[in-house]
Image (cartoon, rainbow, N blue to C red; front, side, top):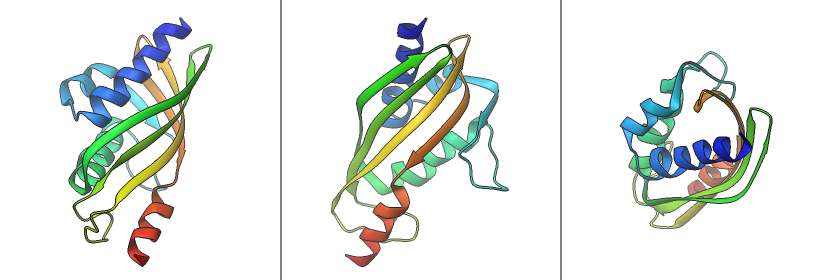
Length: 136
């Protein structure tokens, strides 16, 4: 079970975040998915995740890549430490392109149910990255 759950998360990271594959996104998300990391008062269903990747990161970062450093699985949860990187070639949260390479560190926990994302909790350094870009 742990190896299968890790593969679901790996597939999501590469196919959805890195490659922008919407069909894989739909295949990997439970219809009642909850994103516990969504900002307060904002949508926290499946589209909250897609929106972040497709409408925030992808337009701002060319050569988007996900590097998985560690994965730990226990029961129905997988914790992943990863880096999302790319070239800041488009506007990122109001910051015009700088051409700099950026790296967003992420640690997330995903609960898997029936080979799909059921819940997500996460921490990342996106706000620090945006702040550093704004000062550049």
